[in-house]
Length: 114
Image 1 (cartoon, rainbow, N blue to C red):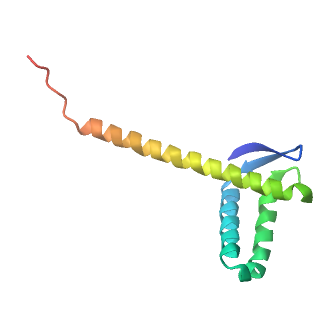
Image 2 (spheres, rainbow, N blue to C red):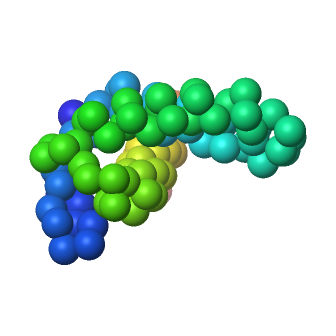
Image 3 (cartoon, rainbow, N blue to C red):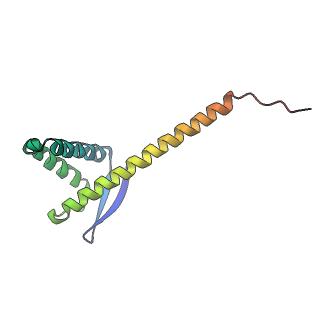
């Protein structure tokens, strides 16, 4: 879990990025995309969007005021995107390092020239 401080309209909030928050943000993005791709379905997904936003906001301390909610959700989505990018970059670096190690261990040592 990673804790992060977010400032919205001069108010400081503390967010803990848990697996649940990451999952909720992915779900919210999917719901936004569904509503964008099919505007007629917005009424159907708006309740799910609202519930997911409430779920995300509940992971923030102190309780978020309605006037800060939109900015907070945007900040949380940005934080999750940044964390996902860092995680992906770390995975790539790990795989590259692993490949280099494997290559070194399979190379035969060179014999010194006489």
